Amino acid sequence: MRFLKKGDDKKPKSQSGSETKGHPDLKVISGSQISGQQPQQQPPPQQQQPQQQNITLPNIKYKIAVASGKGGVGKSTVATNLAISLANAGGAVGLMDADAYGPSIPTMMGIQEQPKVSPERKLIPLVRHNIKLMSIGFMVPEEQAMIWRGPMLHSSIRQLLSDVEWGELDYLIIDLPPGTGDVALSLTQAIPLTGALIVTTPQDVALADVRRGVAMFERLGVPILGIIENMSYFLCPHCNEKTEIFRKDGGKNTSERFGVAFLGQIPLDAEVCTAGDIGVPIVAGHPESPQSEAFGVVAQELETVLEESDDEDELTIL
Image (cartoon, rainbow, N blue to C red; front, side, top):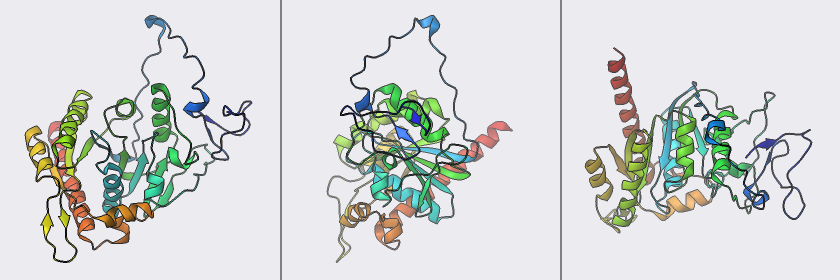
């Protein structure tokens, strides 16, 4: 993927011949526009370009990926509410939507604007609920499918990191697509991640994929900061009785098996889904709810893990 600025000689055309609707100063070439092109022949190994160097982002203290081994576990909901919880605790937070195939951050954060471009030709993040936001979803129509090959995904990830004015942040939360595909690999090649969070639900079918996710990050040399169990139980709004709908303590048991931190359990509640659909995450719209309190606990546990990691790094330096 590359961005075309005003004044470029050529502008991308869709297969129907009309221009792709998108940012007025920034055009995104989607996969549908290149799907008919023949892939370029790879040069011989001795002529291949060396791997691109890491993007350092020195003004961002913690760069944290939020991942899940499978879809449907509420990963983006967790990433969104965790980001707001960290901001409520006084942190400067950015949230990057790295799911090019299904960007959900624009909907969950209730913002459909297009980012402006700075005089330095960098994208200026949108801000909602005190969070700096960037997503491919801000720059393409909601109904447009992103049919991208691996190299285009890699390019888009690098641009969302290096071509955005993130400024000084305590946390950059990066919402990955589900699974163990190209985006996670591209991200780890692009920036030195502080670590990854794994989101799961209690049942075995989700936990099996958690193990694959943990194994992937271990192979990539990315520390696992902790496991978050979403939809852990249903809390009756009338009598406060707790019901484990799926299973009990699956995420906690898995964290113990791998020797990583268990950051907490998030209750299952319809209000969490409704809040995301209307663009006001539950931590922002209902900060006193049990669900918001649970996200606050997860944020506190994450801060503790990061502080302990910093202390270990200081001891290593000494």
